[in-house]
Length: 332
Image 1: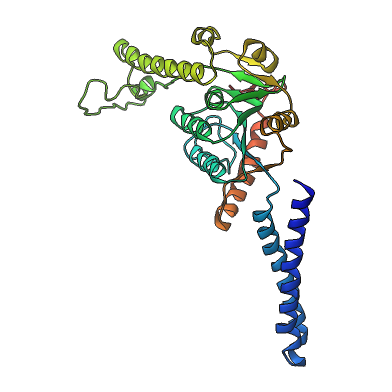
Image 2 (image 1 turned 90 degrees about the vertical axis):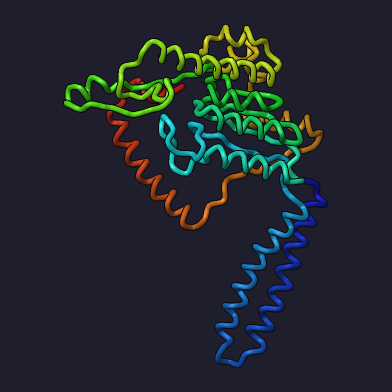
């Protein structure tokens, strides 16, 4: 931000504050009798504090202190932010909220570029694609930045950005699709429970866990997985201008950032400061970022706080059952 813009913001904030202080003094101190003088001073102070906030907001809208919007994708990708495996931390934005944030950034004339911070093991296919499309629609440079993990659905999202950066120790890749089911048929039999469902359509119950899977059913479900995989490969190949055969040769493996960069899965390695320097080159001006987060009501903030406490307690208990090598800490 230039010196003129800084001076303008400070000037607007001071002007609004002085005007509010004068009006507050007249209304709450000079006008009332002696009985209300003490309360008048208090009201004047409150007016000044409120004016500072209003003046600051007005000044920021006139002279914004950012030109890059940062949006984070954290944890398993689901439609509403819950129900992922592994379980997301409470308060984690869902795909719809992330899409809204990106669209808000696109509608903000001050946000000339988008930095999409990725730390996710992947998740549901369609929600991942929704975020990818939102990033692709952004009118300006878009740079994805992988921190700890950018795997599966996270990489799907990154393919919608102009560039993908990562750290040397980032885990990147897992270009593949999985589907799973548990079979409880033997358990039901031992418990003396018989499962029966009336359906229309040969494959209506494909994948239910209460019966043994027939070979035709397995082939049908595998076909769906294969179709999703083809879609994944084609999407990444098109978005990142890569050879589809090369992507298939990765065999859905994950790679550390340095190897991923050598393979072309990542464009550059660096820290967030390096990404901001790159955005500065793309915009040809000094870069200031602002992180966009979903707006929560008071009730939602209270509920999220309570959920975080319960989540932290559960995580602490669970940590007692994890071995010293942290076996369950590495998830892709």
